[in-house]
Amino acid sequence: MTQANTSAGPSRRTFLKLSLGAAAATGFPAIVPSSVFGQKAPSNRINVGAIGVGRISRIHDLPGIWQFDRAKIMAVCDLDSRRVEEGKKLVNEFYAKKTGKDYDGVTGYHNYKELLANKDIDAVVISTPDHQHAILAVDAVHAGKDVYLQKPASLTIAEGRAMSNAVMASGQVLQIGSQQRSWKQFHRACELVRNGRIGQIKHVEIGLPGDPSGPEAPPMPIPPNLDYDAWLGSTPEVFYTEMRVHPQNDFSRPGWLRCEQFGAGMITGWGAHHVDTAHWGMNTEYAGPVEIWGTAEFPTHGLWNVHGKFLTHAIYANGITMDISGDFPNGIKFYGTDGWIFVARDKEVTANDPGGKPVTLDPLMASDPKILSSVIGPDEIHLYESADQHGNWLDCIRSRQAPTAPAEIGHRACSTCLVHHIAMKTGRRLYWDPVREHFKNDDEANSMLSRPQRYPYRMDA
Image (cartoon, rainbow, N blue to C red; front, side, top):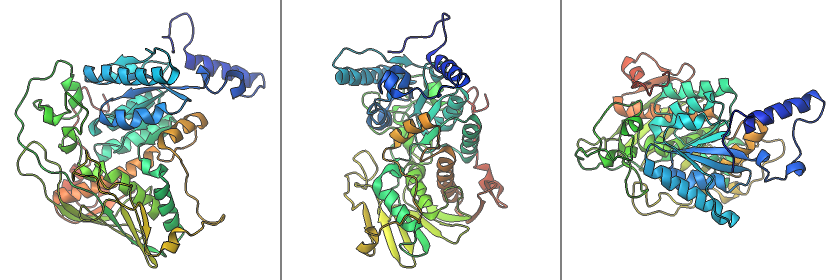
């Protein structure tokens, strides 16, 4: 267990920096061999703080990190004090079971800035609602922390640009939670496409579900365990109702996912994954479409107001076209001059996602099975290979190399989804400049690139 800093000496991180600097000055190697301390020695571990310990943190991010001995989760933070205690309990119980000893080494925080001020925390995993992502990531890298950031990268395109710029300026390692990059079938599909196994790529279809509308929800008293004003963050003040936030008695799918105040719905929820995969295969990871149009159904009543059934279209500068709709199977289908490749997760939806019962899919298919057995030669394109998204992040914290889904790639996937969302809202053909990140001759569409931010939760506050 890492002890708190005192005025009697430097923090663990400061001590390591001083020690490594002294080693360099005397001609000794800057990397301390693992044989000196052992792989599990405290000096080799990456101390991680978890900001947001709700559903996605409990089922995905915390287990994704604690599986590795080179990391230790030493703190949890949430604006709901119940979730802080539940998060501490979950992590403490894991380490107790792992070590066979009583464990009480996790510190709880209610204010993420206090967690960021802890010099013994090397890195943070941000698993909050979407509207908090970019703002917290900027604060984290300014505090000198490496970051694992749940997708989508941002609430708006302007926030995403600011986030990516801040990460690049800081030199910190930020990994977007686009874990499909670490799944074998997605890597394989994109590598086959990039190496011309279906000829010249012409078109991409992306299948995404929409969200159903919901009932009206009356105002409710704010639970004493929830800092609701801070939870709303930069977004406007609105009355509290449980359906707008998250369940108080379990960790099921929260209502904020279906409120446009906090996100764009499934176009960014699943879309951030699938558009990123499409960009990987299309070789447009640092670009975006140049024309976008489409239609969508939006609820006319009820609290939940994100898009339902929709169909959007896009054209890229290289001539590749893209359609996104819930009418396609949930996944990505690449069409080329010589065939097609379809890639998906092993289940189309989970029980907690829109659409109800899980649907089993073949995760990798092609117009000709021989395409899938094709060997990529040594002189062909070999894409970044990662066996585990969280593990890759931890490796890159040590190596200081770029992770498989860095900030700019995550921003570009998210901004493409948001451009499709703006096309849904305007209902007309839009012309996008992915270099300037600006619509051509459309003031209304450009007004949707950012949103007013409420003080004191603004990114520039």
